[in-house]
Length: 533
Ligand code: NDP
Image (cartoon, rainbow, N blue to C red; front, side, top):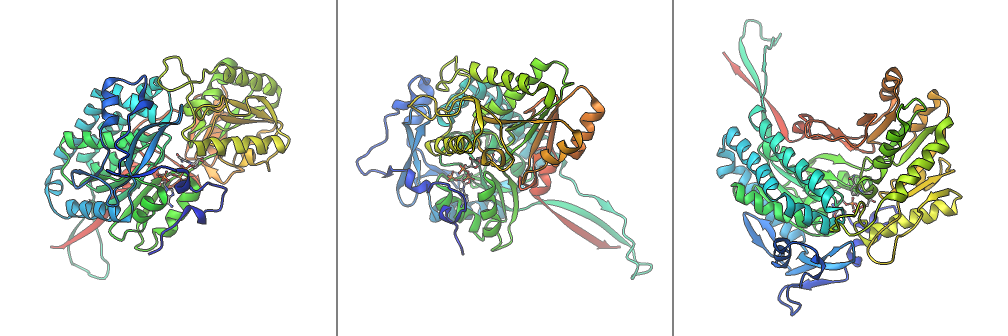
């Protein structure tokens, strides 16, 4: 069984294991951390952070078999929030076995679809009941403003569970009139069943930790699967708290197991485990490729939601130009640019190029940076020191290659992982900042003049996740939307998500779709049953 490591990856990623300087053994004298980093947090969240963190395996909270833990840091000031289990293959194997037991027998398989749906609905209700707490936790762990998490991440996660609750009773097969030409006169009754795939390994990233957990767990549970979920090492907290709510909602033991750890030592064994029937992954295209290779062992089913370098196209006839400029700024700066669908390539019609670039730069300069828990913060820090290095490296490369920085261009302050909202122009197609996913608050602006070239240029990327079009000419909008090879096209809006709307990528942005009814395909097998009459 091959395990994959980040050292085998091609790009200049740092070795994640080495950057966690502090790996602790339980009970080795370090004790549990005083959560100094939760300053400004509520008493409730502070108390939760101070409690020991464990993996959820088979309905119980257990330490990693090795006894090791790693630090979870507040990206606003790099202080310690808490420690979580540093799990390895042994813990993963235990979790997979628990999921398998829960899948093969036990109360989960005996629940009616209606009972399953009600359970998922309750998870949504519990999330809303604890919405303030989750928003705070997400802000501390990821860096995003608490207010944003409160109006976006948490309600969207709750809504996803409740949308999927509705599907639990609607997973239907078909009756099929068959002819069987080689059996003249014979009669049959044929139908299909949609059955759960089995044990699903789910690996999620750090940009929307709670929402990504919901996107993954909701459809898996609505269709009756059992899950081992590995949250990102940077942001494991909301998944652990969600695990508590899942138990409170009445989820039977072993149906959802949550194991914290690093990609190489916990994620890779999950992908390689022969007891796993399917892997659902969100993250970088690079790791997506590793997952496809590693899943080949037992030919696991794989769904992938990967990176993007999305064109956001602004025409001279956009109508309300100010609104379009604000829309373009939101398309890149929302969630600090740490969105797979960020509108990171701003393509502007020549005649309004200077005005738009200036306008977006003006919006960028207005953004108030600060810790997520401060009420006036509009943009928090990037998630980690790694991400800070990655984004600032791109900024250095862009400068070295001759791009012009209209605003921003570097780190903000010297504490925490803040980056200035950045607008870049005078770029060339071969520059790394134009081709590669930066995953930070950095937009590159390019002028265009001809519609024919525009579609080719917009599609000149290995990615195909999303695109934006700003015009009042609806025929043109539809023409461009049809020509763009991407899973989502927003017209006169951007970053519009809904549990009912499928989301995913063309080309190297992934395989399959999240949300909507499309996602249910990934979590079900079709069985054809034929009865001779
Ligand atoms: P990764 O793709 O490395 O991380 C995503 C998830 O995959 C995490 O849970 C990670 O674990 C896990 N993982 C990492 N390596 C492996 C492996 N070998 N086998 C199984 N699981 C693994 O993204 P990064 O955090 O390194 O971010 C780097 C870049 O990826 C970003 O700059 C951005 O471009 C892109 N990205 C895209 C996202 C998207 O939404 N499409 C989300 C996040 C990142 P762990 O974190 O514990 O190591």
